[in-house]
Amino acid sequence: MSNLKISQYCHIKDNEAFVNGKLIFEDIKSTNLKAFSKSLYRAIKSSYSKFFKMDDISRLGFLAAELLLKDADLSTVVSDDVSVVLSNSESTLVTDQKHQDTIADYKNFFPSPSIFVYTLPNIMIGEISIRHKLQGENAFFIVENFNAELIANHINNLFLENKSKVFIGGWVNQSRWNYEAFLYLTSDVGLIDHNALEINYLYNNMNEI
Amino acid sequence: MVYFKSSNIISSLGFGTEDNFQSIYDGNIGISKIENQDIYHEPFLASMINENILEEKFSVLAKNYTKFDYFTKLEKMIIMSVHYAIMTTNIDISSLRTAIVISTTKGNIDILSSSYSNKIEKERAFLWSLGRVVSKFFGNPNDAIVVSNACVSGVVALNTASSYIKSGKYDNVVVTGGDIVSRFVVSGFMSFLSLSPVPCKPFDKQRCGLSLGEASGTIILSNIPIASTTNFIFSGGSSANDANHISGPSRDGEGSFIAIKKAITEANVKSMQIDHISAHGTATPYNDEMESKAIYRHGMNNAIVNSIKGVIGHTLGAAGIVETAILLEEMKQNVILKSLGYFEHGVSKPIKIANKIIDKDLVCCLKMASGFGGSNAALVISKINL
Image 1 (cartoon, helix red, strand yellow):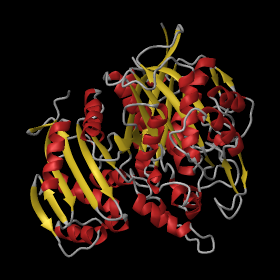
Image 2 (spheres, each protein chain N blue to C red):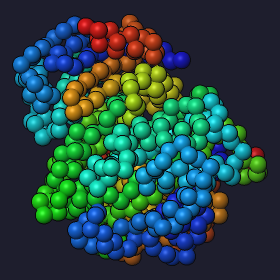
Image 3 (tube, rainbow over the protein chains, first blue to last red):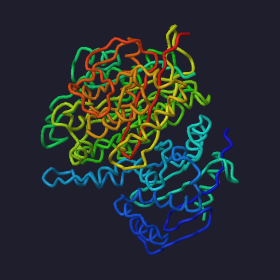
Image 4 (spheres, rainbow over the protein chains, first blue to last red):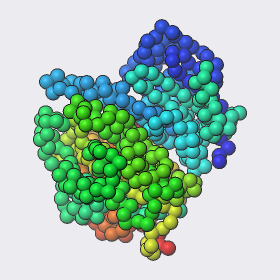
C-alpha cells in the first residue's frame, strides 16, 4: 500500500468531457472521434500545432491530459518524477487498419510513415510527455476491460521503489464504434485514496452519468 | 530478491538460449535475403524463423493439447518458448502464485490481412487475446498481463515482473514475448526508409539503418534462487521518456540517461562497476549516437558495449527479453560476444564496442532499450554467490 492520493480525474466519452465529475463540454453534433476531438480542442482553447498531426486515439489521450493537467501545478516537480501509465483494450487497431489499407495491394501501395508511427499505443504517452515535458516512467498495458487494480498496482510499485513521485494513470481506448478516455493524477496531494476501489468508483460513476 | 531462473530464445539461429548463444559465438548470422511476396513485393533483409522446423517442433509439444484448433505463428513461437523455459525449472505454471507477462508490439497483426480471413477469428488480433491464448494453453489461472510499449516492451515487461516479485504479489513470473516479420511491419519500416540494405551494423561508421528480425523469448523470474552457488539477480530497472520526439530519439540521450540513472540507483551500483552493456544498438544513425552519449555521460568507462542486432536483427517486442537472455548467458560464461557489423567507430563518444569475442569477469551488467514514442528503458543484472 502506498500513501498516494488522487487529486484530479477526467473522462471523455460519448461526445462529452468531464473534469472531476463535472460536465465541462458536450457536442452532440459530432458523429465521430475526429470531429469531437477537434471541437473539444477548440473549446478548451488549446494551441498546439502538433495536435493536428496526431491520429485520433493520440488526440483523445492528448485532450484528456490537457483537461487533467489544466489546474495541476507540476512546475515544482522534477520532470523525471512524473510518470505515465496507460492501458486500453484495442491498442491502436483503428489506426492499424488505416496502415493496413495502404499496403493490402502492392499495385496500390502507399504506406506512410506519418500513419505507421501511430500504430503503437505508447505513442500517445510520447505526445503527452512532449507537451507537458514529462520524463518519468512509461508503461502501456493491453487488457480486455478496464482494470483499475493493474494500473494502481503498477503505479504504487513505482512509487514505493522511489522511481517517481507524480503519476498519470488511466485508460484511453478507441474502437471502430466508440471511444473513451479516463485519466487520473496521483501524487502525495489529494483527497481520494489511490487504490483500485476508489479508481473503479471514479471510473464507473462517470459511466453512469 | 529477484532471481533469474531460466530463459529461452526462439530465433532464426535456434530454439534455445544456449543454441542461440553458441551460434552467435561461432560467428553465424541470422539475417538473410527474404523473397516472400506476401510480406514484401521486393526482396528484403530480415532474420526469420524456419517455419518448417517451427511446425515440426510445435506439433510434438502440442500433441497433448486440444483446447484450440489453430494457433498463429506468433502464438506457436511464444507457447514453445514458454514451454522450453519452464521445462528446466520446478515452477508450477498453473499456480495462482505464478504470473505471465507478455511483451509484444503488434501481436497477431497479420490477421488484418485478407489472406488470413477464414482460418481464425478476428478477435485474435487483440493483444489481450494473445495473453488469453498463452495462459489457457498452460492452465495459468491469472489474467496474463500484456505490455505494448514499442521497442522497450521487453525491458518494461521484465521491470514490471520484477516489481511483482519484490512486492510479494507473485512468487514466479514468466516474462515472454515476441513479434513476427510481417507485411505490416516491413512496409512501415520501408516507408520510414530505416531498413539497411546490408545486415545492420550497430555503432559502425557505415551504419545506415536497422534489420528486422522475428523471435520469441522467455525469462522466468522468481523469489527463489536456482540450485547453484552462483545466481543472477535483477538488481534494478527503470524506464523514462525523452519528451522530445515521437519517432526519433533525443539527440543527447536524455531519456536513456534517466532510465539508466534510476536503474543503477536501484541496483545500488556505481557507473564504474558496470562491466558490460547490451545496448539497444539498432544501427540507425540517431539511436546508436544517442546511446553512446547516454553511456558516456554516465562515465561507464569499464563497460564494453555490444549489440546482437547485427546477427538476429531488431526483434521488436522480443528484443528486450531475447537480448537480456543472451546477456545472462554472457555473464554465466564470462564472455562478451562480438558486436557483429562493427568495424570502424561510428559514434561521437569513445565508448568501447566489442570488436571481437572478449573474455571478461562479468559481475554487473546493463541492458538498454529505446523506441518510438520517446521511450527508453534499462535494467541491471548482478552476479552473486550464495
